Amino acid sequence: MKRVLSVQDISCLGKCSLTVALPVISAAGIETAILPTAVLSVHTWFNSFTFHDLTDEIAPICKNWKEHDFGFDGISTGYLGSFRQIELVEEVFAMFDKPGMLKLVDPVLGDHGKFYVGFDNKFAKRMGQLCGKADVIVPNLTEASFMLDEEYKAGCCSEKYIRELLKRLADLGCPNVVLTGVSYEKGKYGVAAWNAEKEEYSTYFGEEQPGTFHGTGDLFSAALFAALISGQQMYKALETAVEFTVESIRKTLENPDHVPYGVEFERAIPLLLRKLELI
Ligand code: PXL
Image (cartoon, rainbow, N blue to C red; front, side, top):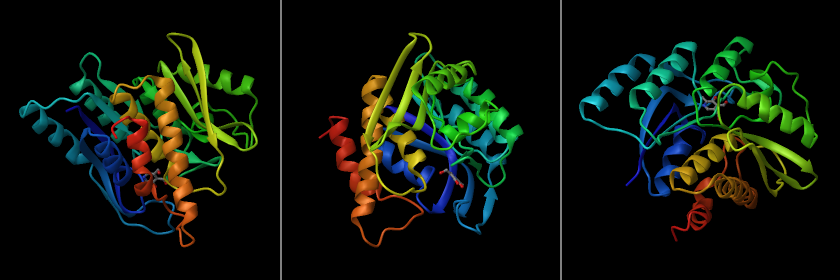
């Protein structure tokens, strides 16, 4: 069985970060170790939350895993709360590095042109450096703009603009860039990707869904990671992750009592398993 590590916070209620990554990657038949960076009562979309920092646990936990001789086929990261945590993630990458180990970084910084609480341009620049150590990065348009010190353009963009953005993101040092939240045509919404080594550009679009939901970036990132670890090629993995995210939103919208703080991904897991050809 493949074993991976997911490094991000636990927002105890709210369906994002580890409470999404763990069930999704595990459902794909992959052993998923977790390295929680902080425990929050709820994610920072809510107007109040508790926050317990776990930075000091990261190095001892990893040291203990090394003593047990554990290794990983991949490491993925999401929300990181401080400069120190980014530095520690770089150390975790180096500590467990081995040929073929997949490092996926979701540079969680913000959405809809705004930073999440507590983040700023200096932090975005540092996150850009972490992206340079990854094999795959999955920024949304807001995060890409912040990391590149570009003005965020709402409702943009031409294909030419996106292709340039992808290349500039690859210049951060990461060979595979997947930009989320891209739309070139009404009713179609998805991702654009650039492989800098093969100079290959690809896109995958699903059916656009109304409304915005929290945690869909984390969901996409978890599904893409699971698909790549399962051996799907990038183009196929993009289809898997986009269709799973779309299905999660579709299921959420079917429920008249749905909540805005997270999507009903649980009911989309059968689709994920079909896309991964596990059922
Ligand atoms: O979904 C990204 C995310 C993860 N973790 C925490 C967050 C957010 C976004 O707001 O607040 C704690």
